Length: 340
Ligand code: TYM
Image (cartoon, rainbow, N blue to C red):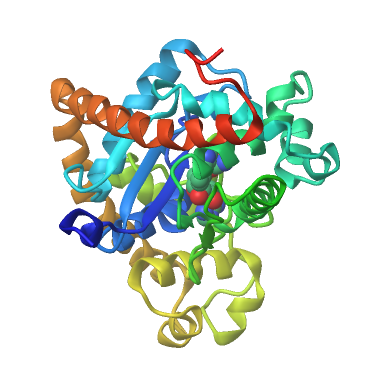
């Protein structure tokens, strides 16, 4: 085994749609784990703009958000020297493999996807084919790079299981081609709920901005949003608080940010007024986001730095993806160019 093979790390891959504003749910459910896992893996972190257009986007806003999200990946602590960061549409193999994989995905499987059901209710004036076949594109994102581990929040579990099924189906039809990836779903923070409606997940594209904490919200806005977060008719934290979805959500956020279990948080704050617990929670969020925002402002101000990282990321991703694509084309029986 040569040195290069010895240094070869397993692949970690994940992506976020550049729609709305990156929210605390995205950070706790996904990005934080990317940062924590990057030591042991080669990380591939994608700004998935092709996914974002399954819902109508304002073009100028989409362009701005793609760069802003990439800068936020870096601000969160992704090391661009050790990882690959790029914009999905810069690597054409994503679209190509998505087409092939859509021919290995059954409509019955797509019909079961809860995200499709939710989004077709939410955007009922635009139930397009891309929204429906979206899981095949997500499978392509993952399978192109022979990914080992995919860190995501709980809402993506179903898509990931489908990606595994598609990979296995393709491998069984031909011969081993794709690595079958494992999910990484964190114990704490896999499903952060809306601050105003704790039955609904916190979403970065929510029309009511009081529902989510944006990673770029200034401290006074963070404070106001947490203060206004719904609670229940009790006034203080108790072990019983974990049975109430609104308080449990605030406890879960505190628990994820401070690396202690929800039960411990409930015990630690037992007897304290909700208002005082919310004050502590605000401090935890501000402590996380103040340095994050400082780094973000530096990075976003240096346009050349960011575009160099994204260009280099796309170049490396392209070369890895083309290896998988030539295998796939050969296996399914496509004629290689130059060999009539
Ligand atoms: P997206 O853009 O909706 O969300 C990005 C990541 O954040 C997680 N997440 C949450 N975690 C905890 N609580 C929440 N309230 C919350 N909301 C979102 C999501 O689980 C996700 O990890 N289809 C994906 C993007 C994607 C992708 C991929 C992910 C495209 N290709 C390949 C992994 C691998 C999506 O729409 O995530």
